[in-house]
Amino acid sequence: MLTANISIPLLVALVLAFIPGNFRFLFRIGAIAATFVTMALATLMFWQFEGGISGYQFEYVVSWVKDLDINYHVGVDGLNVGLLFMGAIVAFAASCVAWEIKTSEKGFYILLLLMIGGIFGAFASLDLFFFYFFHELALVPTFIMIGLWGRGLNKNYATFNLTLYLSLGALIALIGLIALYLQMPINERTFSIPRVTEYFQSQPMTVASPRWISPLLMFGFGILVALWPFHTWAPLGYAAAPTPTAMLHAGVLKKFGLYGLIRIALPIMPDGAKHWLYILGLLCLGNIIHSGWVAMRQRDLNLLIGNSSVAHMGFVFLGIASFNLIGVTGAVLVMVAHGFLAALSFGLSGYIYQQTGTLRMDDLGGLLRRWPFIGAALMMAAFAGCGLPGFANFPGELMVLFGAWKGMPAVAFAIVAAWGALIIAALYMLRAIRNILHGPMPDRWTSLPDATSWRKLPFVLLLAALIAFGIFPGGLAERIKPSVQAILNSTAPAIETVSR
Image (tube, rainbow, N blue to C red):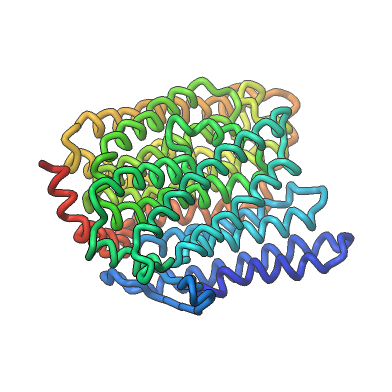
């Protein structure tokens, strides 16, 4: 099932490459069909996943390079089953909103499917080589799509900025992964993530090694997630990106760095993590507070959403830094919830841009009169971004705050983060809603049509997922907890040292 999820988008992209460019409708139909099938498979896998088990399920291994012990190895546990499920829904929604692409559709849909296949492969891979390879397969199309189909006067600058930052982050993370691989004896070296984890848990590294490998992974993966102060690429990149690209990158691919920290850095090098725990906690407050302040100053809706997205990542970093069951479980919940929220927010902003030709909030106003559905969906997205109960962000952020309060001596971290979530986020989100949907409507917007039934579909799916996991978060949390508990049990000595 996992291999089908990875291969279907890649195979459809290969088929589309041989279809003449004048069959424009086939490209869109092919992308929607491929992502619908992967969404159905991911949904089936999510419901068949057995909670309460910490091991891998749906596991599949094929030997590739025996001499280096590189294998195609995929599997799911509590850490990635929700991310794959969320990624499949976002991928289908992104394919549906790609109607805005009017030029060179063939190239765009091929790159979009390559990106989707790479995303599934990155989160499903249990081999370090394929883990990194699939991420790069998803990342490279992002640069091209923004450069060729992006919008705005600053799209070239945003493309180069994003390319430089993410390439640097990926390179730093690669150096850390190679260093991790070289720490093993020659006869024991393997790229298998489970076997590498088991080896270092039974034979921990010397004290010095984790202290310099951990920051390579933390800052390498952190740059990919827009860890403050290495975050400036994200708002600019998302503001310039075509809507499907922004939905997929902000919603799904950006979680790769966070997933890498939890999957690799925490269980393999807990002693290294403890030396950087408070640094990570301080930096994540920069995400929450500084990016929230910057969002308050924005007049462009996409820049506001982009800075808000960076701020939400601070909660995930805070949950990881808490280093306890409730905090790390909450961090994974926030990753899944934010994936739905970011995709919904950028999808709605794309609709507004296509209908009005602008995202400057000062030029909009009163749109709720013309757009009852789009306006209501935008209001719900804003409420979810504020952490309102009933949406999936609320239980995740609440668990992170409890984890930070319980697990970190600096209780001020939790207090400041709560202030950022409750006050700053509410200010910029509610002000955006007021400027866009309420007040007087300019005459030029009086004839704007609301979304048709087909164009409502992706927004309905994303909203339904946000509400479902907001009302029933246990359906996801109970799948996450055993895998997080297994990681924390293996790092118990390091946690005790941090506590002391």
